[in-house]
Image (cartoon, rainbow, N blue to C red; front, side, top):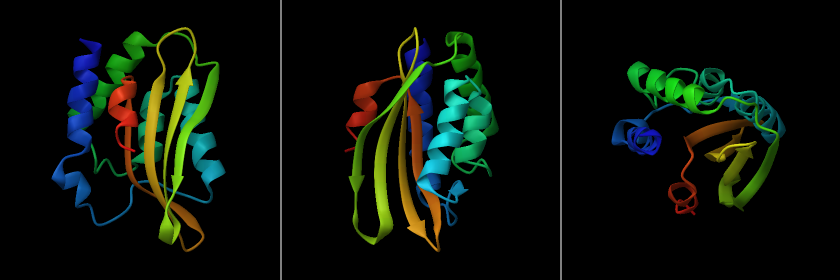
Length: 141
């Protein structure tokens, strides 16, 4: 059931409407700030706050999908994450970058995939996804 919800949410995050958004998702002062904010929320199991950090205007996920995502993660993950790693990173031209992070503790990891662009001294999140299914995240590379 949990994996079904994650697959459903992953599909919702890559819909054409999200891809055609005219503004970035979250904007941060640096990669380090993005990693600390998003990673800090995920490690502390603050899933709603993590989603608000990467998508403050809720343009990539409906309120119903966001609620379902937060509820299913909150019901599954009970103990804060204890470890994290940057699993893969590709630096592209024009300030673009894509990365896959992992956060884990005593349960299966959460993966955070993100495409960013450095623009005007800020880090713009252009695309993102969170899942507990490694294969669905690593295949984005």
